[in-house]
Amino acid sequence: IEAEKIAEEQLLKEREVFTYEKETMYITLRAMEKEKEECTSELQRLSNELAKSSSQDVKTTAELKVSFDKHEKTKLELTKAHDEVANLSTKLTHTSDELKECTTKLSQSITEAEAIQKQLEKAKEM
Image (cartoon, rainbow, N blue to C red; front, side, top):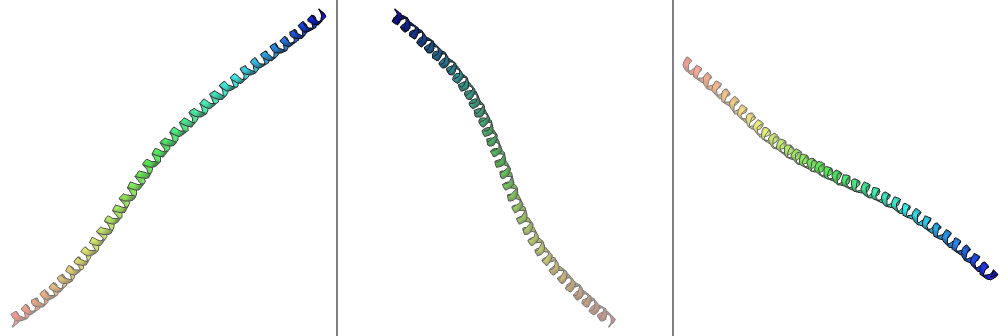
């Protein structure tokens, strides 16, 4: 009987230890589940932030491309305008040369006309 009592007390102690360990594991499990939920929530927040950042990067990249395209278009327009100015400058120089030539010819014609006029006046006097 005494051995049975000791065995029964031993079983009760083991059951208490088992119950304590079971409760400890349950508490630990609940803490781990809570930590898992917090990690999942943080992971979702970071995922959302990354998606927002990626979206902003895509938008910024598109804006940069539009800006670059405008820059290239303006650069091309400036090159065309520069070429046109150079072409007009060449034409202006040519026109100026023609004008000088015409002025020289006109001066020669005036000089010749004056000489003829003088000859006519001399001829009238005779």
